[in-house]
Amino acid sequence: MTFDAEHPDRPNEPGVQERLLELLARERIPATFFLQGRWVEAYPQTAGLVVQAGHLIGSHSFYHARMPLFSDDGFDEDVRSAERALVEIVGVDPRPWFRCPFGEGADDPRVLARLDALGYRNIHWNVGPDDWDPARTPRQVEDTVVEEALAKGDGAVVLLHTWPSNMIAALPGLLARLSDGGAHFVRLDQLPAFEGSAGRG
Ligand SMILES: [Zn+2]
Image (cartoon, rainbow, N blue to C red; front, top):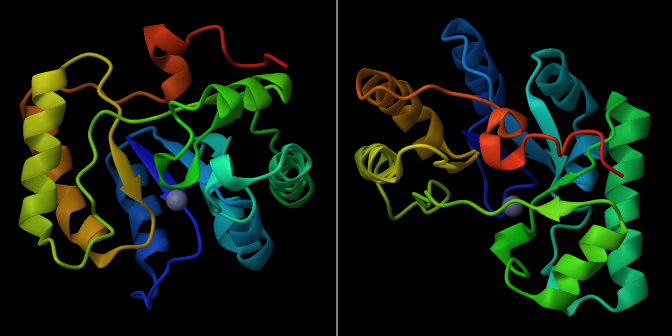
């Protein structure tokens, strides 16, 4: 389970992020959170709660811009600004974990090379239920995650966001159904594909 924490692009229900953390704690589910630097600056207490809960922390950039659109200097500045915010505000070095906003740049050699030079690797997803889309229902989000994650099996990387009402409405049901389906929840650094990545750079 991976969760992107960022400034929502529309009004959102208050308290969802706290309820998410409570639910993961109650169900003892370790997850990976990609935190936007500017969001961490705006919500240092919530960001601190994510870290204290023991989840793996990655960077979701600073401005949540489309990474391929940056100049080289602008790219590096954005990534370093996010890193600085995470280190200074919540005491976590997010390297090597990075997720490109909107997933843009995931297949762009220039973006991947710049991330690598800065000590990062981009983490894409293979299960994306579009929980941010208000046109979808919680049931659709739940069904998409359950069906696609169980079909994928080992190495399923589920993308959710920390703020949508659809996410928090769908999460209890989808976690229960995944557990019933035999899923075992781990942080990204516990997946065989990524083991040994921690501490690099
Ligand atoms: Zn995002």
